Length: 492
Image (tube, rainbow, N blue to C red; front, side, top):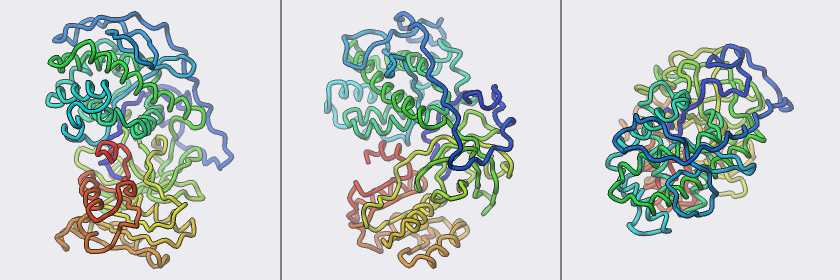
């Protein structure tokens, strides 16, 4: 989709390539002309999960005011079941008894009120977790800065896992924790969210042995900045919670490792500059890339190693295996500007695994109400193609929003689809002409209570769109967002 979907970005290693790129950070050079393997092409054998080193002894927390103190040993392992309080962080373990890692992918940050929930509600651990988050939210910047100071001083080898510039990375851990805290008692929602993170983190080079280091430094930072509510009971709750969260992620990663590579190389085959700041980029992956219309993937370019951004697929799966993305260059958007202004046919990028649940349920005949703002029209176009390929005759209503008519860069494509499929209706909503923003425009039409709704676009449009859809009678369970993580943060 667009750069706004950077909320799940995470660090990667410079050479976490399963030995396919020749080692080191220059992973593009050896694969300048990737193969175009067909459906029967064999994928690379996933790298086995390494056997962990002997667990270090329990540590003593450093003085709260000195993150540069000498590194202390890591935490001792424990199990997922609640245990008596210990001052060490318990790393999760996979089915083989191996410890595991965690990182700070995160959704759009919700408000403190949305995160903490009603005071004193939920399980005992949830109450303590939310109390901690309420305490540290006003000093979020200090918490994250201190966390990274602890992490990089105690575990300097982990610095290479993160982008050189930390300005785009530093706040994601807290936002992920806020999401987990919000849904600590909602297992179904939380597990789905964490499983996506665990699978996606394979491409970042995270390993099981990273989890204890992250947990140790996380509790060190929280205990300093939540000192007013921190005690042995609170720390024990965080140990249990962190252990559970980490276990879900490592289990998902281990299962995914058996059936898919950690990433795909992809060669840019066409680069179509639609406007001065929007490009349609089409790539050929070096291995078959299975995905569903409406999903998205993460992209890393050769110009900004270890920085990933998320983009939606702009078409349903194609017989030729090509993938297309609509990319809008945004201010300070390293990846988006590189893809729009620097990338050319022949360049090689990397793709993470597909993710997202904004897909069509073909077991029903409900109509589809689709709202696409800006480059958010990309997955909407994919959904329309998906409906057409399944031979459905269900009604599909598309609202294509833009600030000006110049920003409707893909309107011709959408109108051609409308001419081909009588069940499809496309309406352009131009803010400057209608003096009405996209979500509110649907109030003029309808009713929509029997439709499945799909939203894709900037986070602000998504938030207001969800509110409008609920207000006009669309049940919450029928509202699908192009970013699962933002839905989780919004309580959707």
